[in-house]
Image 1 (tube, helix red, strand yellow):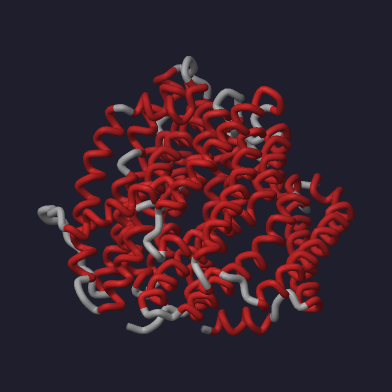
Image 2: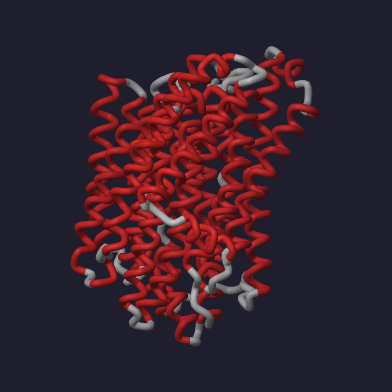
Length: 528
């Protein structure tokens, strides 16, 4: 089995994730334009959040964090990998089929757990209806995540990274179709044309969710079959290895999904403030762009790489992989965090302010973007630190850290909400992200050489901070100069493009001068 190439794998995942996030922007721009931050938008966003929340436990957050190291070691050892993957696939399908049925039946309880502030108004009934439409998505997307884990563990990243693009394609098609061909609901329900259009778009989006999940699963199933793992639905069996997988996955359910749990607390708090659920969602979309492209890409590639290096006793190689992943993550996310903090208003106004999305919505969303920006490096560092534990099949300590982080988030979000309002939800998420990084870092100190920082990382970190600070100054100056352009419908897109370009050019120029990175390293990785 050929070794996983960390940098080329990262860029493969990163580029496809970038495309998915850009299309996700287009999707959310359309949702904001048609639905704004009103009750239909909030109902759909909560309904779509429910299967995504649980998928972090059953798939990316728990199952895969336990499955990938075990599967990678079998691939490296050359025995039993396909049989193990087949048993895991069937077991997950059976469990999630029952869970999906229960979720549909008890949807009112799930919506209450996610957004109890909806009870007593029209948002609650809509969220329950949309939630029942959307919830089967968890079955398809979780099976897709397992299949993606099989592909990633064998060094095949493209299909798994490209699959999320299909979700956004389906959503955009649903919005366009609903807007152009939707039924005349204003005649049947006695509502205005604007509300009728919103209901058509909301219905179509909710119904398209499980279909999008099925399409994603079909694509990665086909890719896995071509890679030599044609997994099938058949009679389940409980093997000793599946029992061990369950034991490892149970604590990883919380550890891997801690960000989602904290977002759940945030949405619960936000549900008591009209429009806040939507503000958090649109801000989440902005900071998820760098988090997805960098953090998720690094996490996807680093975990199987570390697992296989540890299996082969390559401690020095494991240390180098961890340091290069951390270095690259910070080189790309610290400047992104600075940009989110310095220019949240231009970003939010140009991307979202149109149609039903008002100036007040822009101000609230921009504030949330800046707060999330403060936590962006922490969210990414978690993606590089957690594989140190999961590659060793150690899910217990991340579980303990996640419990501490959850309690802290609950105290901050709920305790500060009466004082500072909805923004307490975002502040709690950010502060908890940094607390989790501190706990993971302290916990990794007993892992030996593979978890230590090398001289190159230490030398470049402070240079990355200097380059990012210099870029922040450039962004602030350019924003002031271009300020009048952002108020012009014809020039706002040009102004934002110029602003973003000035940030990119200044960061890489300053970074090259101070030695934060070498541009030829990026070029070499892209060529690979």
